[in-house]
Image (tube, rainbow, N blue to C red; front, side, top):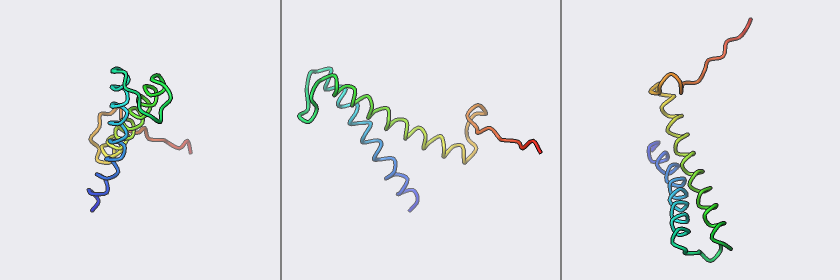
Length: 84
């Protein structure tokens, strides 16, 4: 059940990133989608959607790997020491 929930959590940002790629590609070919007013706005929205989706997926994978201690030392969280 947990794997199914994790898959669903990753599918939504994956679809957002794919939509962003599609909007950027359509901008290159000059295809404008109706709710968006101009080509430049469409490209910027596509870039934003792609970056948001990609960063969410990357953060999810990094968090999971940190919990399992499978990351390089430079990506591990630094431990805080109390000065007491």
